[in-house]
Image 1 (cartoon, rainbow, N blue to C red):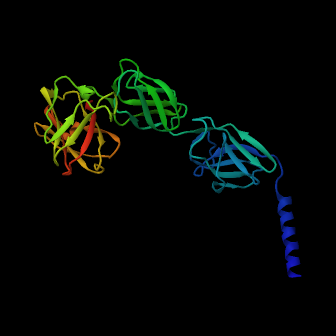
Image 2 (cartoon, rainbow, N blue to C red):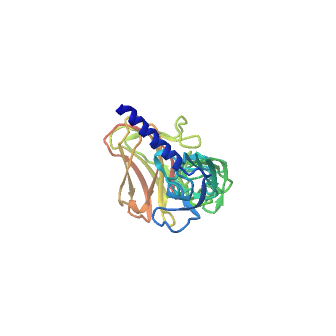
Length: 332
């Protein structure tokens, strides 16, 4: 009998709840945020928490942002408000209408939800020449409208949210990378390319190889960063060095960075190469990565801000007999 009475009461409560639901079609009157509940917004950002204002919203089953549905766990609805978190990535960089579906209908509210400004985290390879393809890495590239290397606009081959492939035009070999979307423009932390080449398939004018405690192959073609040739450098004893000499002495006026690409051979993971200069200034250590190319960018201020350089030395500094490959060495 007690069970029977419980079922009757549950049924009655369910009917009462059902009858109290507002069965009108949903209406959206605007969007506010969680901190200012008085001001209607004209736009918000990906990933924001918002409150959708309106009527007949308590039976909301889905909130769709231009094809991307908000997670159920990030949604709470009353008759006049829906508190919801916008997904972290949407279809369009700006125009992302909000569609609310309830048990009794669907309504769409035209609204701007902006992706963050673009972010450039790097590019590969680190240097190149006309007609070379360069991959720019980062985030929020949807709707990209322009890519520049300094002031030179380059041709966009393809793009996704996190990657852009471009082709370098004639006359473009160096510069900071700028990516523009409808939301804004981003600049790379480091520049692309070399203004002065120490090694790029061949030694640059005025530079010679004066390495010591090692052997090398200046023509190997099996493992290269770019082009057709990289230097295979074998440290025959620990603390051997790859060294380049400039004749005449290299004047650093107008240059701020030393760049080098190194591929770590077997056993080099986590090992060190120390950069030093002659005349002596500060030293700087690079950590090697085994089995991959790594593009290193070293501010000259970290090497003592030299005004003139006779030798640049890349010395093995872990006491390891090992092998590395060197490419795209020079100054920016």
